[in-house]
Image (cartoon, rainbow, N blue to C red):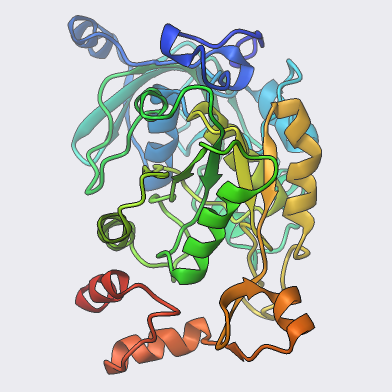
Length: 396
């Protein structure tokens, strides 16, 4: 069966893309139908399938080209290849498989499905592949463990349906969200031509240390002098105890107003986190390449997670950094290692190595302490958190 991934090319799509990095595989796809084509597409469907929150994120990223060059959900052959080798059958790098799941026995190959979400008609999926996956094999390949203590292993075992579906997507309507998610084409149109674009991924509110981290990345030796940083938080489902996407969005909007930094671009990504460590770091790099980024900041223990029972880490602190760096050349991107910054009484934010060498006095505030101070109404030091961010969190 033909791979959903299009053949890789060397040329970017569209005139506006000529001065920017080429999309993954060379083609920035847009799977949305013209308005006059939508009624006919919906009239020919065999079944209606309601998307989960995670499904809706995947459908949106497929439609707008965030998963370029995919033309739909992966077939079984590509799924297996990505699970085992983090590549599609055409050899194209992909960190995690993109599949639609269902428990419905009556769905069969050749049928057309109307994918709905909270009263909206998102897309039509032509079923070209249906199979019952080996979820233990998927878990081990993608997450390095079969333990249900890993949030993504638990997700594929208990939330995803019995069958996976692959096939082409025809987009009808983007999901309505409380925060605007610019498409890759829209983000690319806002980026400076011929300059480096450093992507910063996060899934939590941004504090002072984060801001120092991604603004200092602009001064890295491998970043052009007029480069910009794209702060591109994921606002889809994450871990159960994470702050809601709508609240996170409000913190980012307020912070953007407060800092008014012309070298920062802000956009929001409708992506469902898997907490897959190394594999997720690769997935994030591919997505950000499609949004026009040339560089990617890899933090310590990026997209890592802990056992829900023992609290032990599933990945080493630099495992994601090493894995992403090893794939960066093939992607045509560069990584910017995350600086280990600490706040000192004498010099403000400096690297931990600098603070230790000079015997500076380091000030610390843990996440647990921060949350306790938020709840109790205590004054939170401005060296730790921006006042605008604290105001939003206290009001939520």
